[in-house]
Image (cartoon, rainbow, N blue to C red; front, top):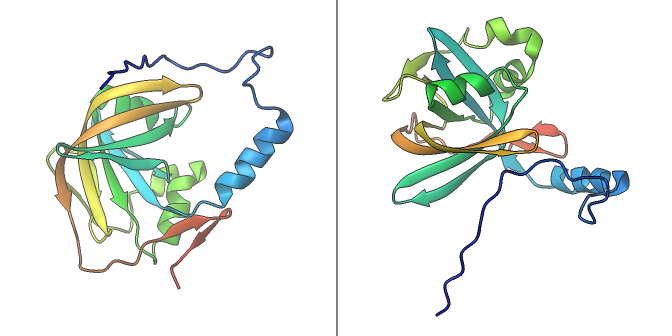
Length: 182
């Protein structure tokens, strides 16, 4: 068996002469195509210098089960980006079908001061806020970060997991709107 080594580079925006650069039309088609992919909705949180930070996200995937590792994709302009990078921790909270208002609050910069109000939060192993009553909370320690254009991919080793209830009724984001399974 032949072993292949793949080099991973820090990726930056393609130059205008780059044949792989998408035209404006293709970017629009890309966005339209991605809107057709239904995704679970999460709130990613962290704590840094005695402050709590969080944002709504659908950019999450499982990397491995042994050891348990997740990855999240966070826009570098997001106010939670630098606190995640500096604290080296985050908690992914999987939202349930009734959590649309919470998702909107965490997605609205004007609601930043109200994000952690009206719901119960606990800290798990890392100290990042975990949402009591969410479908699941994955408390993670950042093991690696990779810059890719406007985003950073954070890899997180799962330090603790909470399944807050037996309910399995997720909030979804699909075609530009929050949805509930029928």
